[in-house]
Length: 381
Length: 231
Image 1 (cartoon, rainbow over the protein chains, first blue to last red):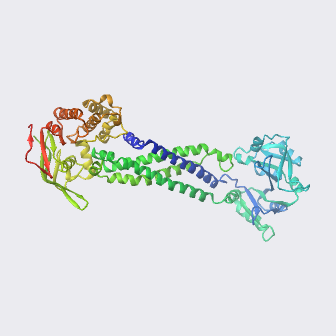
Image 2 (cartoon, rainbow over the protein chains, first blue to last red):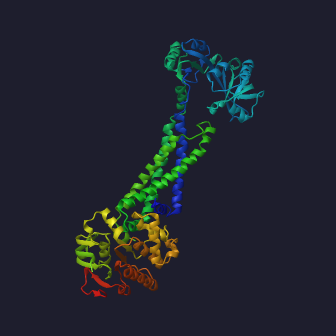
Image 3 (cartoon, rainbow over the protein chains, first blue to last red):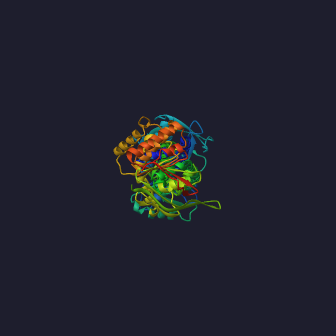
């Protein structure tokens, strides 16, 4: 502790340079924090998945439709408690940027399969009795100011039998999902209404959601469902929820590798910047370091002083950067690409990188300080 | 008078390019406890090299250098640094204070290497600053002090750990006559009242006159004509 003023003084000898270096490191760690946070969050996505839910999609591609008639076959597979077909209608509300997703399904089965989605029983009852009804997620309702009784026009690219592509739904209820707020951005509608009104792909779905009683039998049930449709025109791929969700994320690309490449390039550049700053700083202080040695500081002590300076600079900047990243991280949740809090492992990983950065950039100047000959350094003054 | 500094058959050379320069040649020297020795001589005569050997910041090629009872040539780098911290105070021509530290913090530097508590360090630093009459300027940084004041702070830094030996390399070389006289008064006072042995390199005959003994170096050898001013 008693050496802190000395280290601090060395660090702030050239205030502008130190501040600029500090800012560069801070910015790098903000980038690291946000990107790594998103990647970590995406990698962990599905960790809280329900193990008693399975998803049946086309083996060829997730966008390849399956016959809705598969539903009765699936519900007959031993171990299956309940199943619901899901078709999707993607459109926009008022503005093209206001994208909304309408899930066409059996509402009772759907809300039974997703007990986390909370809806008033009378609203669910209203949906089953209102052909064009829809129960909207609380987030969507807040976003667009929808209330029960409103009729919502949705512009889509799905052609209706009447030749138009505009669909209208009547809001009959609002559901929320406190544990998974991101799931509050959907609309749940009656499959029969959408399927009968659309001109193309009638009688098809893009997936089935399957509820099972015993999660330990999931593998067997998946295999049994897929076996039932093997060698048919529409073979299926059945996965548990975690696999299914992670598969969807993989469709975005290898986010982890992309993030690592960007962050790696940034830190590699930063290494030169910090190394240059530390080297310049030591070069300018050679006579001062020589005096320290003359008055009794050992070679190792001077080396440690320089390394501590680098560590202090890098770790302080990293901490500021990571805290700033944590502060702006909720914005990624608003964009729907990550959670509301930056994962704790990102802090740990970031501070580890800061130490590595300090060591790699601080070692060459520290070694120079270590080897400094007092007489030569003082003579050069 | 017991010898604080004892050099026997000391030789030192440097290599400059392809040239080997003999700086000190089989030199013998003894400096007694409490002595104030002035080393004079032309540039390149080996004064500063001799001072560096005595101060333990350079090593002789041959011979033995014993200071404060320690054979310096037998000490490793780490032990030598510890020895310097305990026994030697350095005063340089250009003060060599840390520009970002206050006068107080500069004087405290040698004490950071000791086991003294913060309170003990504070007492010692204040005493050293009072000794050089710089108590009022303890919060000032070197850039806010005159040359003479900076040298006073440097002397306080050299004295704060109560060294056996004060090694001064042209301590008045960068000062005007009045300032130089004040610094020399201060060194005389330190030598007289604290009993600190001083070895000072100087070009200035007036500065050398303040010493109790003067020695002349020429081409790496001590000249016979040394002037004894005091026992």
